[in-house]
Length: 103
Image (cartoon, rainbow, N blue to C red; front, top):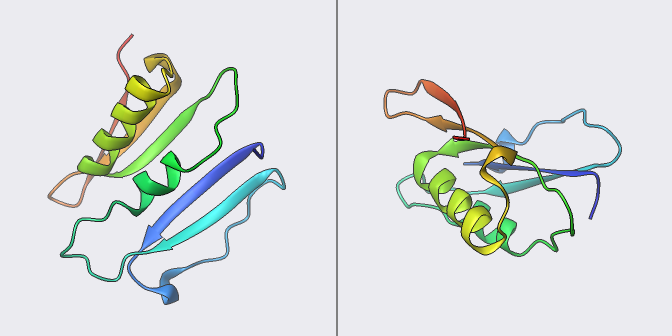
């Protein structure tokens, strides 16, 4: 596994942007063309990763159901400590809310 992985989900291929990231970070783009259909692409992608042993840290941003599914997977299946997560969810009014996990 590389030093980090960044996963972005966008509605159109035209929405993909050049991202300047450190050489050790892999950048992946997922296309979800129908915004009216809930997407599991990010969750499926993360679950398919070959996770390293040792300490894992995450920073997740997105729609609340995606964050909830990823948080549940990380906590319940991978046993990643809650203190190792930071997530940013999109609220229905289009504004974001940041929350560090509880200690």
